[in-house]
Structures are given as structure tokens and as C-alpha cells.
Length: 258
Image 1 (cartoon, rainbow, N blue to C red):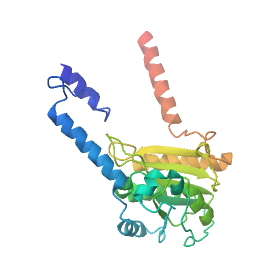
Image 2 (image 1 turned 180 degrees about the vertical axis):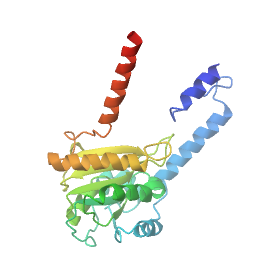
Image 3 (image 1 turned 60 degrees about the vertical axis):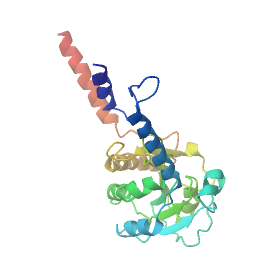
Image 4 (image 1 turned 30 degrees about the vertical axis):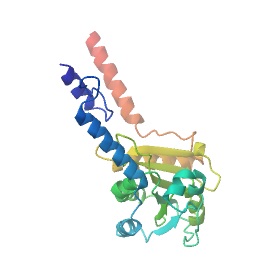
């Protein structure tokens, strides 16, 4: 009965729960699984993005030839030790001012693996969701990148809104999760309070590309109406569904009373 209880809970979470024990220790299988997850997380941080292969994938999508830039962090080791350098561009001379509505920055972040696994699929969903309503600048691939590097890139692109698609910090449950950071009217010096984040994008276990793109579309529209992004801009994409659920529950309770 205990195993049945934990098995049902595990269907709803990737957390390590109800692992059991052998004597005073975890079962050997769970110890090995934990070590494997730790190794995968370390690899996700340290294995670099294969830029040429990834650039070919992005080029084939027909959104324009991507430009590749890097931060002032010279290598992965310095990137991890000096977050400040990851926020500053080494050279943006290859970026052309497009004056588009939306710019995309595909950043390796703390999990280049996440960008390799999900970057192209997520970008395709975003382009499909936004392409009919807004002009899109060709994507920019950024390596050794932190989120704020996107502000410098966006200023060079001349875009009104920037979407930084970046590999999130890997954990022991997920090593390939992407996040999207949306900044309206981006410029160097913007703070995290002036951005909106959609995180945990890694289908099939996390947020799907389509759902993430739908949330982004709502936030872009809201930012343009509000004139800014950040703490004043809220995701209301699920408000209708939540209202419907509440109404259904209320109706069910009313019928039960009768």
C-alpha cells in the first residue's frame, strides 16, 4: 500500500520522493540514479554549445541568417566565476539594426544542452505565434551569455521587445530546461524587475513550446499596451480557463446542495 501511495504521487512530480531504504541507506538503484542525475547536471553546465550545428538548424527555419556573438567571458570557466562578464558583449559589430518589433536572442546560459535540445523547436513556435502580428529580426546566438547580454544585443538590433531564450540552471531532476526573458524597450542597464520570465520549458515533462509561445504572445501584447514589462505586467493567459473552472466547481457544489 505504501508503494502504491508513492507511485501515484510520482506521476505528478519529478522530485525524488518515497525512495525507500536498505538498512540505514538508500537503495543502491536510487544512489546510482542520483549520481547519474548529478553527472548530467554537471555536463549540462560545462559541455559547450556546438555553435555551427545549432546555427545551421536556425538558418533552416527561414527567419534569416543568425549572427553569433559572445560575452566578455573568455571561456566557460571564467563565465562561471564572473557573471558580470557574461552580461557584457565582446563585439556587436556584426549585428545590423533592423528596427523590428521583436528580437530573439538564443543564449547558452547555464545549460547549453537545453538550447541544443529545445532552442529550435521553441523558436519555431514563437515565430508561428508572433509572425503574423509583428516584424521579427533575424535571431542572434549568444555564447557565455547571461540574460542582461540581451539588452545590449537588442539595442544594437533596434528592436522594441527582446526575447532572450536561455538555458536555465540545471538541477537533479531537469538538466535541459529553457527559460524566456521578455524585456520591452530594452537597453543596457535594465534590471530584472523590468523583465518577465517564462520558465521550465522542456517538453514532454515541462511547459510545451506552444504553451510557452502563447504566454509570450499575451505578455508582448500587454507590454505594448502598458508601455513596459516587468513587475507591473502579469500573465493573464490562463485567466479564462481558471474562471471557467471556478464556475464549474460552484455549479457542482450548488447541485450537491440541492
